[in-house]
Structures are given as C-alpha cells and as structure tokens.
Amino acid sequence: MSRFFGEMRDELVKRGIKPSHQRLKVLEYLLKNRIHPTVDQIYIDLHPEIPTLSKSTVYNTLNIFVRDNLVRVINIEDNETRYDINTKDHGHFKCEACTRIFDFQIDTGCFATKDLEGFLINDRNVYFKG
Image (cartoon, rainbow, N blue to C red; front, side, top):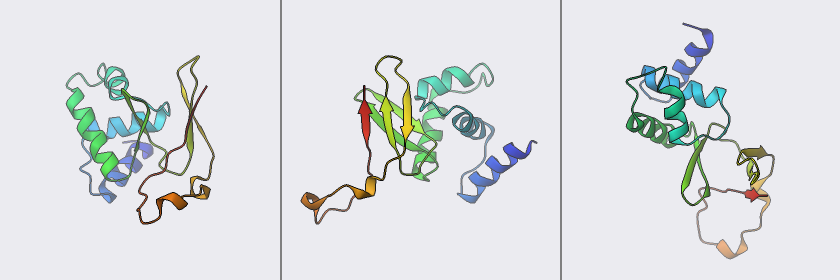
C-alpha cells in the first residue's frame, strides 16, 4: 500500500468512516482531480477501474464525506451539484466559456451581515460567473 493511500485510509478512520476500497478511490479521485466534479464525472471516470462501482455508492460516499466535513457541496448552477475537497474558506468562479470552476481566495467572514442578526450562519459561499 502506498504512503498516500495509507494516509487517506488513516484520515477516514480518524473521522469514523469505514475505509472501503470504493470510498478510498472516491477520496483519491477528489484529491487528484480538483475540478469540482459532479457525481456523474466521478462515476464515469472511476467505473472503468472499478466495474462494480455504482452511482449510488458514489452518492452515498460523498454524502458521508460531506457529513464529516471532508468535502463541501457547491451549487453554482441550479441543476448542478459539485463537490469540493477544499473545505477551507474560499470563493468559486465559473468560466462561462470553458465551464470550469476555479477557486479564489476571499475572506467570507468580512461581509457585513447586520440584516441577519438573530440567525446562525452555517455556511458562506461566494460565486462569480463570467
């Protein structure tokens, strides 16, 4: 087992996630392909390597990863759920010409939220398109 694979396995165990082969491959995919993929992209890319992989397994794995703050859901388009392995504070820019999504640094904590007093803010997202 490679050191990288061992570190991924240890991270899942540390978070209380059973490190199945499919989960490790989805995590490896996210770490090596920082393209904010959809479930379909992950499934299509991993299926040739893991013929027993189902879309349900990819969905369930990502839901576990989101629940345990290992990945973050981003919704820039209404019909498009993507997954981001970078859970640190940052923004997203979707290029309308190439359709790729790029990360950029931004302090989302500096935005004034006076009109939201009394509410608990659980998530902050900044999206730009152009």
